[in-house]
Length: 135
Image 1 (cartoon, one colour):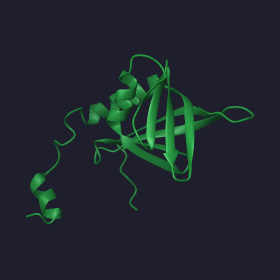
Image 2 (cartoon, helix red, strand yellow):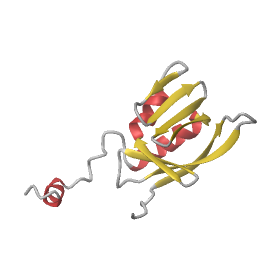
Image 3 (cartoon, rainbow, N blue to C red):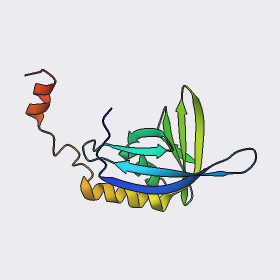
Image 4 (cartoon, helix red, strand yellow):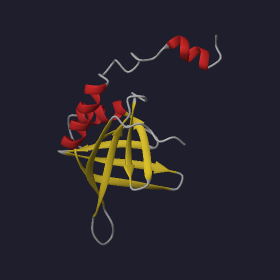
């Protein structure tokens, strides 16, 4: 698998509650303008790619404890932080206390590279159709 060309990369932290004490986890947030609708969160060696719009929607929520997203990835606003909920066939994890300000800065930086509603501006439709064998 080819390594993505990262256009924007930022780091933040979150915490995972355990029976003993909370564990702080470093989160690398990545954005690649070649995949303009997606963001990737790297948690140690695990990469979760999901909608950039999901992050924007979570940041725009008024009120606490409201979740956005379905299925594998959900974000829940908890005041000045967010909780990232990840589900997979191998397990469930919740990462708490991710600073909303860090996510907001990351999102704004992605918009500086590919503005909202301009994600398809660089698509060459004729080339895409040819690659799909439709012309």
